[in-house]
Amino acid sequence: MGLDVLTPRGQRTLADEAAAVAIWESQMPGWKYAPTRKETDAVVDAVLLENSIVSAIAETKCRYGVTEATLLGPWRGEWLITHSKILRLCEVAKALRVPLFGFLYLVDEKVLLTERIADSRGQIVVQMRTDTTETQETVNGGTATRVNAFVDMTNARRWRGE
Image 1 (cartoon, rainbow, N blue to C red):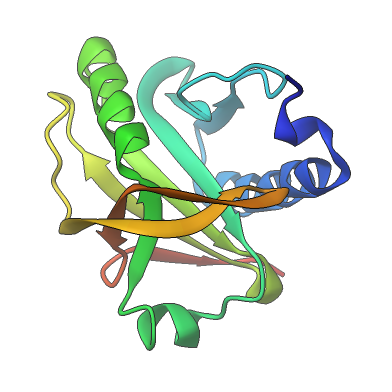
Image 2: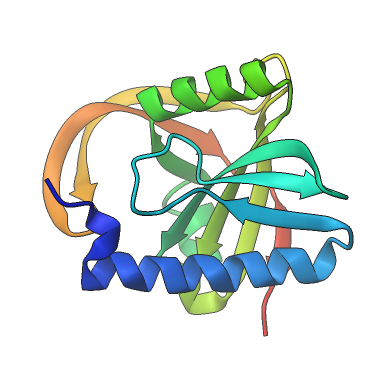
């Protein structure tokens, strides 16, 4: 089974993730976004290093055709992430004793939203609801019915790219 990130659409997400990272790193002196290997199915997208010390982990998603107005209007400020993924990320945060941050990049507007999702004990600290919904299965399409988390991004920190 091939990884979706190795497809043309997957490669686009990698380039857009790099753009989001560049926005964040330009505003966070002393911090570095250290990605995990994209050709693997690592649970964590990146560790966040502060002065070379692992200080947080990150889940990063790029969204296409989505504006802040859409996110905050019809989507009620909610970012959809597979619930089982959130639970696995919380376990990693707990194991490493670091918080978990969500990085949501709205590609068309070059806006990065970041929100602390869990603390260093792996406890969820953001408003979030769950629901079983049908969504796109992967970056390459398809559909999947699963339990999804809807993370409240209304109070997320906003970073703007050029």
